[in-house]
Image 1 (cartoon, helix red, strand yellow):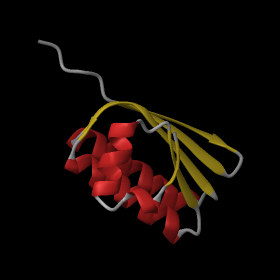
Image 2 (image 1 turned 45 degrees about the vertical axis):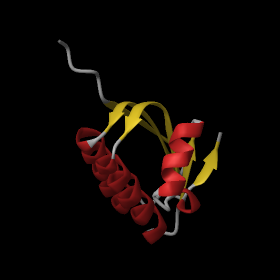
Image 3 (image 1 turned 135 degrees about the vertical axis):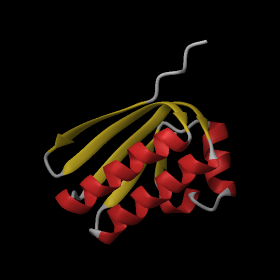
Image 4 (image 1 turned 120 degrees about the vertical axis):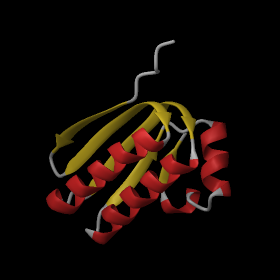
Length: 106
């Protein structure tokens, strides 16, 4: 049995960081988002755009990574835009009281 691929692709465009997450957003994905949060604290971008349309699932560990990324972005007076969330992800974020923290586009 092969393990599903988990990947975070990032690029910098001007004063923005754009990231695309692919795979299960669990402990490994949370570690990737925490690393991105560290990059945000160093670079202080005006906006971080995170596309999670490729997230096969979102676990509680993944939510903690999303929250840390949101807090890091807010701390540098930036904005986190969570993009391409489907209905199930949006419902989970809302239940975890994280939906209000993100500028989401469906």
